Length: 158
Image (cartoon, rainbow, N blue to C red; front, top):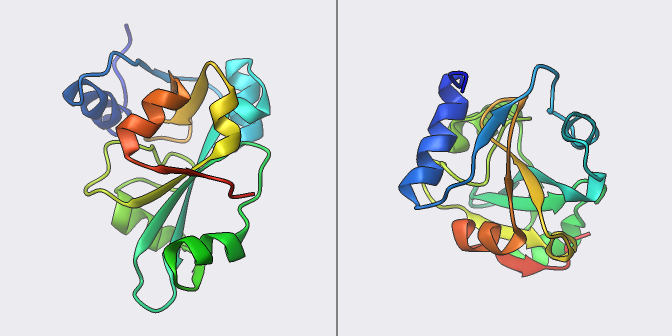
């Protein structure tokens, strides 16, 4: 097995520390976008987990949304869920709160737990794929595992 990059190794270590056997895989081609990830993996776009960071406008709290590849987040619905206006986080905020760059933010291995919402559309799949620390690293998991790993609330978010 090839050595993982440091960021991908952090995700692999986090999975192991949580007692999961999931394996981080680094691809030669980018998996930064959902479409690129689906092509690299050979799965449907819907099976790709997009890790999207939003920020509440007043309190500046980070909010993690784990969305199915083709779906766009309904920001009005998200604001209702967090009971505060939200905005898309900029790359600096994303890196500061997650320790990872946009395109590689994993659902696990974050410095501290974030308020997390899971797109209910992901729950229909037997297996899904999430980012693993770099724009070309991913790992396979089940929707049930994702819910357990993140403590996220399953919601209609598109």
